[in-house]
Length: 494
Image 1 (tube, rainbow, N blue to C red):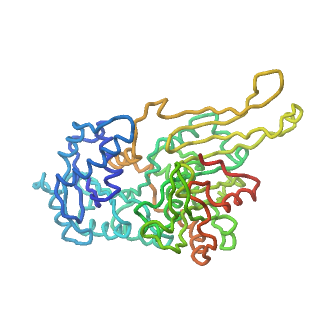
Image 2: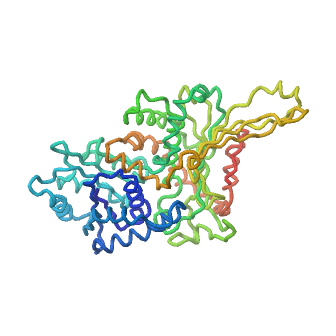
Image 3: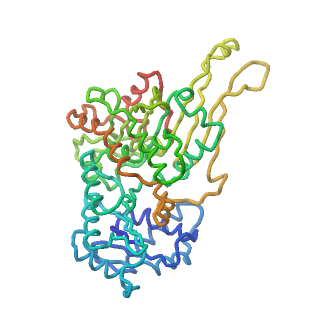
């Protein structure tokens, strides 16, 4: 495994802790080795030390262990080497190639490599080109070469197409693993099994029984140290074409004819392709943006977005977005999918909420039961993975009174799952060549095609009321109006 961006935050915070968890589970081969590629002058010991500090924090925050397993960490560090190189210098790739040949100089570069691009997205295309020119991406003698590409994959439809064209000139689609750590979450992976393996739910998973779907990805954190990045990106580009649309696809896809990677990815691509692309005149009625002002989270004051580091004091960048999507196919015609994502919200939550249609009220009126609570199926992805079902049941007693009931399943309680970063499954899948949970080029481009009219409209129409929601709140009032127009309301974020 060659990690480009070995000294970066992503490597320290997520990739290495995931490798540690895989090592703890004995899922890494004995011959496994890691080369950390970065521009900074460094050595093996110093690099490993910086990684250990972040790993310690991860292990302590998990609550399962108080300290790093030194035996496992030693096993990993024996296999970790730091390599100083320049992403834009062809000579660095030649030197890397020579480094990879060292253990087996007689047979050249025989063996399996995957290159993890934990780098700024502006370097994706050039890094792949250099891998191709140096011969590092060439597969031969039964060995494989794979490239893992982080998000964002493009900044709009045209840039996504251009990036695809550039990397597909070097790599075959089968070598490309466009990673989205949301898809490593157990609940996300379980959506397909939950839907298609249970006779109770599959027959009702359609327009006949489902009123609407809400998908929420809310965060309590602000932009942290990413102000410069966020000023160029915003919530829509950062979250919707990748994270959020993957949740939409898993929720709405048709049953694949097998669990082969291409069969699953084809069904996901069909769903995104079926989302109605709105006209410019429709954007104001189907999409809402927001930006957080000062507020309070967890009893502590937090600043407005415009006062964050590296952010303009007159910034027009959105930190919140809500959209109404229509999937124009047989299963979902007429069923709106409401999506929202934002920073500095009331709580950290990623959840798919499925609202079932109400029954005819004739019988309940005779029993003098007004406004029975609706039925909801809740698929919780973070922070506490699980599934809940809300329905009505008669309250014990002589009168006919309906009470709200909630059945709740938690992964940690039932299966005793270990804490994870979400990358463990994905890194393991790269090694075994299972691309099921990774995005394909057509899926990426279809997602950008849906959001492009919104990006274009917002670029030419500046918001007049930013900031329009307080940090620690439910979001802007305009997002509530998006559902009120349809006679619906958001589930509360708490």
